[in-house]
Length: 201
Image 1 (cartoon, rainbow, N blue to C red):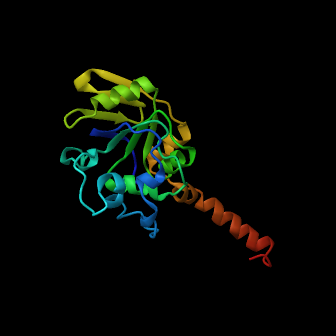
Image 2: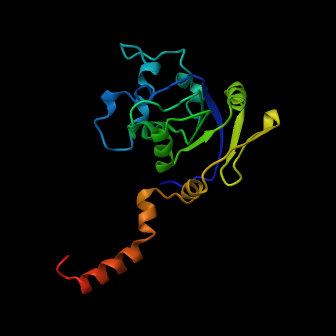
Image 3: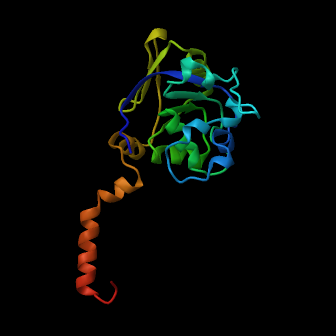
């Protein structure tokens, strides 16, 4: 998993409430277990009509926002099914941080496991950030200091985060990475087990 320290990027505004995982990545695109290649299907039904034509009124179809690494979302983002393809699609599209007032628990946990920083803020702050989210205004997100800074607006927002999850993001550790940190202890245990109880192994 890629390490996360600081982002400097414009933010894409998506102030829709109850955006569920089927809206993020529809079920017909869940046929792969690869984490790459899903970005092109992100928000498919919002980005394309039934004939596959691009909807020009959707923010992520605007050229100015195709490079955004930050998404400012509405309440209860990531609700619905527990599919891990949702954070995979967001990450593959280029998003490294999602800001909302609230997230569905499973989606929230899956973000951390895949290198995405989900930030929870109060409604007033999220509404203000949605106003600031345009094609020119840069958001600087510093995970170490737990700050969102917008220099053009002279605004700084602080956010809370579980310190263990913060450490994992900064060090780029997913579940496999955390396990590999204990590989010597695991090897020592297996060696001891084989020596003392050879019939088990």
